[in-house]
Amino acid sequence: MLKPGTELRNRYRIVQVIGRGGMGNVYLAEDLRLPGRRCAVKEVRYSATLPSEWKQELREQFHREATVLARLDHPNLPKVSDYFSETDADYLVMDYVPGKDLLTLMFEAGSRGEMLSEEEILGWADQLLDALEYLHTQNPPIVHRDIKPSNIKVTPTGLVKLVDFGLVKEMVIGEATITVIQGKGTLPYTPLEQYGSEPGQTDPRSDIYAFGATLYHLFTGKPPLTARERFLHPERFVPPRKYNPTLRPEVEQAILWAMRLHPDARPQNVAELRRALFGTSVSPRLAAYRPRRPWWRAYLPELGLALAAAAGMVTAVLLSLR
Image (cartoon, rainbow, N blue to C red):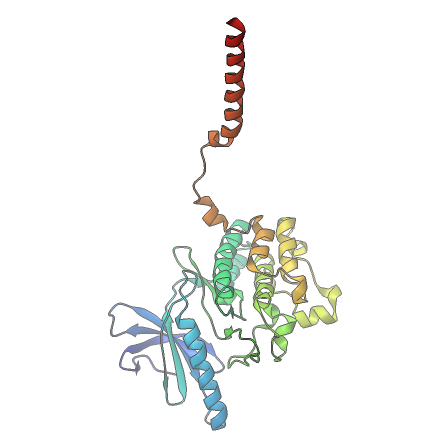
């Protein structure tokens, strides 16, 4: 673990550890080149016992993924600004996102004997769907592969950020699924197809499953059964309204649709899922800012016909008087 005060590349001064994992840590750091800027530095450290060819392959993978992340630009994703290697570790530098993750907010509500409100959760879901749609419509599409409450932060201004890209992969025809350093997702949110490592196993529908499982957890306060448990013991799965009777049936149906075990049975894209949740394929936030036509514009065609008919009647009367 890097100690506070350690400098990387003569630019990033470590302040403290803000996250830990099996293969490295995430640090809060100061950017010495841009005074006042704080950033998150994600570390991937390699074991000294790892065969050199494996280490080289993992480092090449890291650089490929860092390159993918560096080109992304979306308000609900942290911006990657730098990446580099030092001895037995690789580092990814991105925006530091202040605020609390959704898992923390859920636990805090539970400690007060409360549940997160439906309006609040759906507001976060709307923003998260924007980020997923952006990722999935890249060319080629990008799949996050580890969506879960602890990887989603809410800033003090209410902006949602999907913060951890430990399992991101670029979908390329013929490319084998990347066995990423940190693992293959978190079990309660991982779809069946992500358990394997054959080519073409995961695609954007895998993120849709994880999104549905995340909503299940947020609305019920309980993590869902793993996909494997559901496959082996389907009778053990508890629909979310059993835990939260106030949940609207249409929202429950959207969650259950997203969590179908077979990818073909799920929404095939974000637009379909958004329509199931909100009744529209357009973000409710964006729709609210669309300029609305004055009410009388809707009646213009009928008004035109009425005026034409009136004009015809007047003409007929005048001709009859001649």
